[in-house]
Image (cartoon, rainbow, N blue to C red):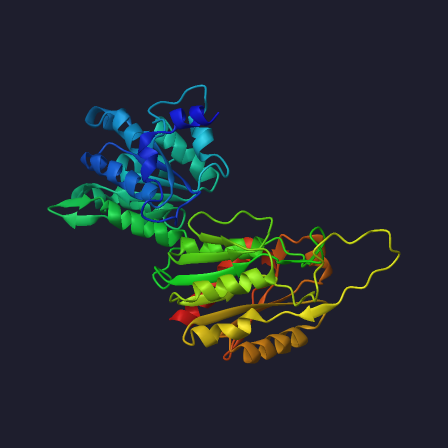
Length: 415
């Protein structure tokens, strides 16, 4: 099996994520219309791949007369679409949720007009028609002579599509509306998917997941935590350009690509890992792990017999890791998490403020995990962010959006 995978691996895929992981997991369709600027599409495809994207090219008939389709296959490692067949390439690429973004680079007046008027007589126009209907975001990078760009019909088509698709303005040079440079398109795409100049290259240390504390070599006590929120937040930070070191307890969720992962089991392991990592300089520390507050005072070295009708276990208080962070790096932005159950919003805020003071944190993300609607649908959540200046609630939403909400609050504190 391993040999087969190696054989099927296209050599061009070696560059994927070589410059960043902001676009990891994103499927991008690159439609290349008939313009002399088409040769730059190869560079754009490679730039997107270097930041993690999976790119599939759709080339017009005019483009194939300028550039052989094999060049696009070489660039992306994926089959190039030059005609539509019984495989329904347009549906596979642009139907609901099939891709994350369709880029038209370069985009001609002809391609623009066909999309605006519902004409789908080529592979590109058909892919765009499907994507337009399925609400996949479309980004057009126009390229044409200035006189064409200023044509009333072209302006009308652009006006119709305004606020329905996205445009990157061409550069007016030598009487031509030239396609934006590939680097400019990459920057736009990165920002579109959450890339943030505020978090770019910021070093973030983060804990996530539960810890387990051994009673004996087999039995443990733990907290109920899947690690989902932590993994979503780590992924958001990486997508925004941050360099994330993740100290991860035994959670169920897979860590995001791009994070440096340090796996731990117990609260003691996590504390030691945090202290070790803090020998290096960080800009942000996020304590999102569900760390045990109490641990067995005297763990047994051998399995306890199950014949007894009753056993008593003595627990001792575990160190609060968050309380020690500012002792190691006093200027770091410290973000803590606080979970409560079945309390009022005012009580939740007061609990968060108390933790803010005790830990010298800069921000506390608090939530009530005892709510009945959380128990019914743990994929959703509601958090309240408390700092010394404000209290702001996210509202009830999916954990993916919660992660985006928390990321924005961190960005605000870093400004």
